[in-house]
Structure formats: structure tokens, C-alpha cells
Amino acid sequence: MSIASNLRDIKGSLPEGATLVAVTKYSEQEEIMEAYEAGHRVFGENKVQDLTAKYGAMPKDIEWQFLGHLQRNKVKYIAPFVSLIQACDSERLLAEINKQGAKVNRQIPCLLQVRIAQEESKFGLLPSDLKAMVESGSFANWPFVKVEGVMAMATNTSDNEQVAHEFAIAKEVFDWLKEHSTGANFEVRTLSMGMTQDYKIALSQGANMIRIGSAIFKS
Ligand SMILES: *Cc1c(COP(=O)(O)O)cnc(C)c1O
Image 1 (cartoon, rainbow, N blue to C red):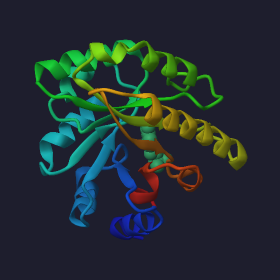
Image 2: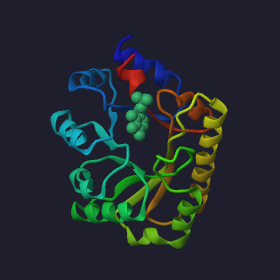
Image 3: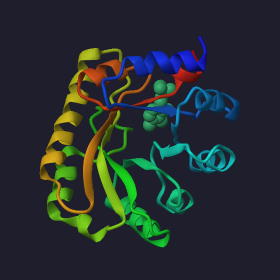
Image 4: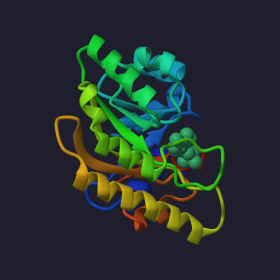
């Protein structure tokens, strides 16, 4: 299989309006260019250094997203160009994104990561904390943050029912956020969930953005 045909197959399984983020963390520029030449434009990385290097080296009409846990002291390196910060998981990180957004005069698109997995190691806001944060009005302090939705990662397990149950919790939080968020900080439209091993389950639970690495670049 080629990168182009992998992309075509996965895009073919998406509902109308859903976005495929091609995750490039295992990929060299040559492979990313193959995806680019096949027409793909939305890519994601989970290391700041790799993201800035690839952004610098590659065509400028690519939308580069940041995917995983983001350290606050590194926000400044990506603030000028990042198209979406996918995993905002604390008030302190949001405050830093706001600060760096102000410096470059950009309202930075963000997703709030909600913790759905039972695994201890996963980052993210508990649904109740996320709701409390929105209801408290904290976001008014962060005019350079634009919340576009919710991101979630399920437990890494072969128990499909458990994965579906976890994704359903994220969908509930997404629906809640759409209904309860107001003001210039919010334009809620994206529910990002699903990776190579579980994206079909994620789509069945309402995801409209999936993040795929291995199934594009390593199969
Ligand atoms: C690596 C990664 C992905 C993609 O994983 P694959 O299993 O290779 O599809 C998606 N989301 C995040 C946050 C990642 O770190």
C-alpha cells in the first residue's frame, strides 16, 4: 500500500465534513511530502522541536497542529504558526497560550482535552473540571485562546465496548460545551478522537476529527 492510497481509504470512511489529521511523528519529510503531493494539508506532531523543524522545512500551505501533552515553556515556539493545539489540559497551559498568543497577536485555536481513559497516565481535564472551568467564566481572561472543541484519547485496550463507552463520554462533554459556551473564546465544532487502532469506534461515537499516524505512514 502507498501513503496516497492509505489516505484515500481512510478519507473514504469519514462522514461528510470530518477532518483527517495525518500524524507525522514516525515520519520523515520525504514521506510527509508524499502525503502532501497526494493533496493532504493537515498534519500533526507531538514534539515541539519536530513540529517547528517540519514547519520550517515544508510548504507553507500546510496546517500544522500540536497533538500531545504540551509543556508550558514550549508554547512560545509554536504560537506564531500552530493551527490547532489539540490537548489543552490545564488552566496554567491556557494562560500561557493566551500570553504567547498576545505576543504574536493571534487568537490560537485550541481543543480542551477531556480525560476519559481509565489509565492513570493519561492527561486531560475531568469532565466535571472542564465544565466548572467553562461555567466559572475563566476564559474571559484569555482573549487570545479560541476553544474549537474537545479532544480525547481512549484506553489502549482491545475491549471495544469499553473504548466506545469512553468515547461516548467525550461526545457528551462536547455536546455540553457546544450548548453552554458563549462569547468570543468559543467556536465549538470539533470533536477529535480516534487513532489508528480505534478510529472506527470513535467515528461511530460522533468524532469529526481523527488523528492517524501508523495507518497512513506505516502500513
Ligand atoms: C501518535 C498519536 C496519534 C496517532 O497514533 P497512531 O496510532 O499512529 O495512529 C494520535 N494522537 C496522538 C495524541 C498521538 O500522540
